Image (cartoon, rainbow, N blue to C red; front, top):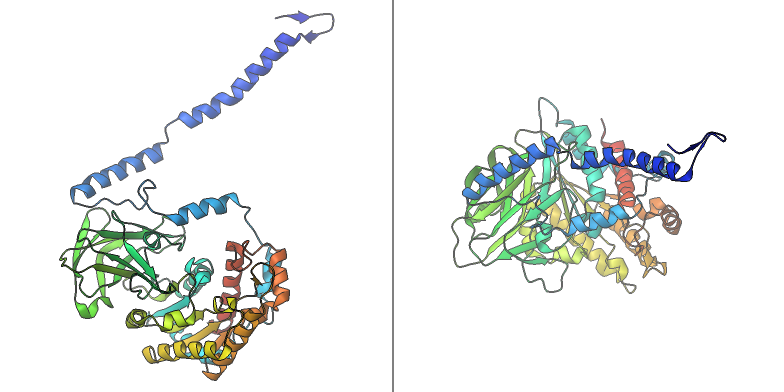
Length: 465
């Protein structure tokens, strides 16, 4: 070693060598960790290959988690969200909004029937309470409604995931926990389009395929905390479907005979075991097209809340009112409670005719009352927003006032989010907290989850025994 003993120091070349050795000692363990085989993942990979080998032999390959073959715009949007800063609200800020004295549901007495039904979710009754939440793009992504669903199921029990649709196959966004796959493209439509190429059913969307050999696979993303595995499916399809092959858990399969009178969800099909994904293929095709409108994922002998979420991008009250197939199918969900969250898209018209808007709201509520005479209703108003990102949209207040008015006249409940937030004051507050997306019309995940917490708190204040 080259040492100057008179000064007791190491010369520069030696010092540099020692630094390089130290750097190598730091890097080598990291490289070994990266190259060391992960036995857990290896076993999972072997198990997956074993499953695929037998699944392919039986004519079906599950590709829900195969990114190479999955059409999943949601996955891409999540990547973008992961890059963007995550907004985390402090407990004190959340408390201010959630415990706001204005955060109340109007006409709480109307919900007494729902309260009594929820009390019977426990032994010895073990009933299922069905909630149907209808809305627009604020609802389709399931950020707000997931908070409501999980919160109510925590108190009263989880009776299933509810109605879902293969949104990816329709090239649209959807809930973060839903994935879908098909080996062939489908023609799709949604009820908010002026001329939808496909009839739209209970989910506000529709898929159509002329080929007789196409199939649809839909499932839940794996989660350690969620308990949404299902063993009952309620299928919404075309009346000409005939027989459908159900495949799940790799090798398990059943044949379901779809009679014309049961094609719109009138019959529940019981599976032999619980699963997180299921594939449907038509076994008795004819010359007509095969349509797919959604499937309700439910649990056998599981009491609690079954929370159906129906959201359609760009939807208005009039779009739902004019969708005849939607009305033919939604009754099969047997709702005990309807929550309606619409009005944002109507408020984008500065020349909105208030009387016409009110008529559309009444028409929807009254039609639902005819289908579900024992159901209760909660109409929610839109949150404040900017018009074209430039100025406060005063039409939102007009819409909110009319929704509260019609709800009162129809003797149902309402939740005035616009008023609870204080109109423009709430708009500025949400802007300061960074809860809006750049369009200042939609919210980020934190913004929607906060709204879900607020409505859940208002609901539980009434419903909790």
